[in-house]
Image: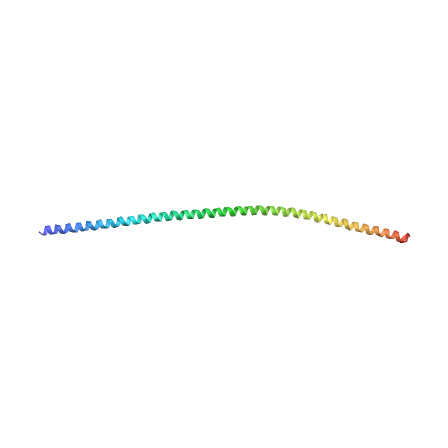
Length: 131
């Protein structure tokens, strides 16, 4: 009878172990299912984050391109302004030179008029009485 009883105990132990194994396997399947869901959700989150990051990068790049275009326009405008200022300076220098020559001519004309007035005054006062 010891053999039958021993056999029953071993069978009971094996059945109990099999039941525990089946229970553990079910827990593993459930855990694996939860892990798969978490991995899928994480993948979705990473994909959304990547899209948001890419959109942000593209927006930033577009902004940089816009700023670069504006800087290029400012540089071109500055170059044109400097060229116009250079031409204006040249014109002012020419105007100054013409003004200097005009002033010299006016000064010579004033001297000539003074000399003429002197001659006329001398002529009038020298032989011709004033009226």
